Amino acid sequence: MRWLALCLAVLAPACGMAGQYEIINPVYRVPPQQQPPAPATTTVPPRIDTSQTCAQPIYPADSRAAHEEGTVDFQLLIDGDGHAADSRIIHSSGHAALDEAARVGLAACRFIPGSVDGKVESLWMTIRYRWALSQ
Image 1 (cartoon, rainbow, N blue to C red):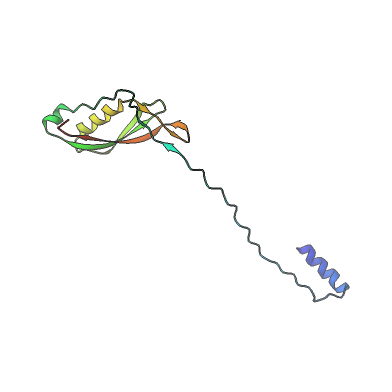
Image 2 (cartoon, rainbow, N blue to C red):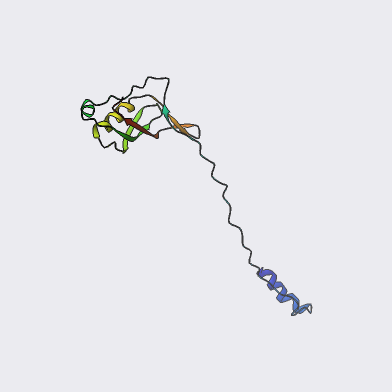
């Protein structure tokens, strides 16, 4: 652009074109480079392997005698081999013995591991277990 202005400034008076040109510095807004949207991730959560035996957790004798009932929510980290690698209580039943019995009992089950975009990965799953004396 400066080269053009210099040429016109030098040549225009020699050609009798003084005052007949105008240099406009337009501002071009270059649109920001648009990133393609991130591909959607496909997550398949882990689940209990129903082809394997998964024993129901044993009702703790002290809790049964005390007529304790409740619902516990906990999470299990299921590794790529289908085993519970870690666990944590999310919402207690209000009775530590029931919480622990559900967590330990269901952690012993066999699981089908989850995957992200077709690749097996360790993933958390949430389980709700209801303790009722009618069990």
